[in-house]
Image (tube, rainbow, N blue to C red; front, side, top):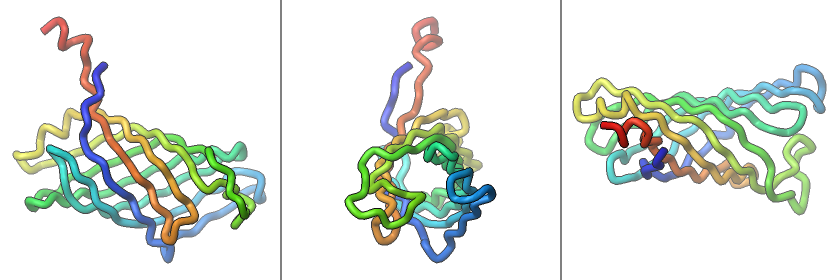
Length: 160
């Protein structure tokens, strides 16, 4: 498999939309919801993002983000996207802001799919991509720096 750069950018939380529910107390699973925006740029995809995320945080501290949204390209197309994966703490916070979030930085990985009806972007309907994230939970607002890579199947490419 070959990884081809697709885009990089930022996801920015609208913290006024965030809510979370600790179903079994603070040490158990937590379900939450948030909305936000952002921007991505790449050689084939550039535009603004609107999204919702309804992640789950497991009792072991691993978060399971689940994003759905729309990429409004700079040339007027709309592309739906969805990604789901894992993120985990990598840099402990000097000062703990919240007992459920003791990390200043989190690392994330996710599988990304896209869908477009616009003829110029129908190629994304067959793209399977991986997304990596550098997450800063205590930025004001929370910030995700992201990079996405299209996964190109080398196994079939070699035989074609």
